[in-house]
Length: 571
Image 1 (cartoon, rainbow, N blue to C red):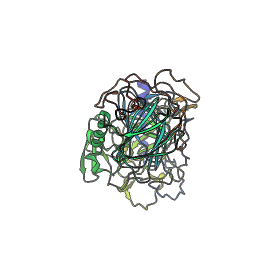
Image 2 (image 1 turned 135 degrees about the horizontal axis):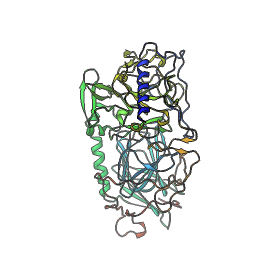
Image 3 (image 1 turned 30 degrees about the vertical axis):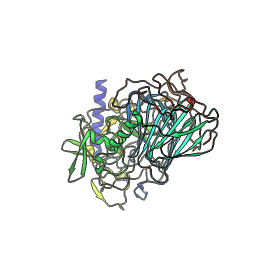
Image 4 (image 1 turned 90 degrees about the vertical axis):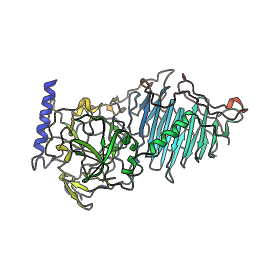
């Protein structure tokens, strides 16, 4: 095994050095990332790399019909599980996972999770809760809460943008900033508005009704009064924790160096430092990384239904530096350069150059799959999106100079991607990452990486397209596992959530419906300051109300269950 790895490393080193020779592989097309796994959810229509006769115009920053920036899983504590359509089972949730329609998250009894939407909006779930993303358009986000306790702390909701929260008892539509909380139990749904927030409620089988600010609505779907309205109760310990956490996240030093609306910025304050470099302006240097660390080495590639292969880094700060800006190497350290501040950031699933070694095969005849972080001003060649966007030089969201082959070019310069041969970071020790194609997208890169790759001159030509995973497999959870097409496991009885409980309440936008899935994976809790499940979790109507309408109290042993939904409703 050691001899084999040394042979692989030696061949790859020779490949990179040969590639640096002028004119090497001149006839080869630009490299592309691997295609989606067989059986994966359909990807956007693909386009072949542009031919030599292509007009060479750069791709637009935001092409028509582009998918919106995905929400990210920004925080987990304790037991938090994740399931994506195509996965064979629930898996431990990974922070920095970009979320797509169909994704489901579940918190165990002492678990907490947070979803960040752009920079100033947060969805949090606490203790035996299940929340999923049903739909996501540029101006519309639809979430589903099957059970438990979920808050929406929305600090900046753009005009015309709407968030819909679906529960077994009713659908709640939100179109302005505020603080919202929903508690879903088998027999009731409670919804509270605060801090100027208002909403529209549509009970299952009932008419839409408005909810004013500082109100609580309790939906039971049974009895003479299936819907009741009360004054919002006092904040409990979890509400106060949500308020405090959001205030801390939006008050960051790093925000002054990046465009407004960029998520993941608060993590930079805690895990690195900013410095000013004459050539690049303000750059951020991560702390606590290994001496031989390089970008795009401590994480994994996962298949995203909208953006194709996407990078998920294990570092707590690993969102903004891997989806925006560029990486530069300074005085033996890596630094993330966001570039000049622009009006609005543009998300990319990763900012790397994929390349290979055409004609060079190793071991059992498989080519390498290799990549390197894009350097200052270098274009990305998109592997996601629609025809006319895929395969063109792209500087979306980049406000700095445009650099091709180490030369600054004008915005109107015709750029044929076949002529892009130089990537500055290739010459940095340990910057080029290479894996066998049968290991790409299947677990952490660190476990599969071919070591001892020597740096070249920085000049590379594209390689052949890396091969797809084995036939019959499809993309699974971000832990790298895959499911065989047609695999199905029965849901475990008496414990855990059921992914995609079939229910629709209120206006629909075509959310996918899934069958039941197996019990989530459990992990030992890592308590990080969030209140323990069951702590002072009380949203009760005023004293003297019918006991049948008392709000749900968290139970330390309860598991989420299926609820058929309210049968009728009235305002």
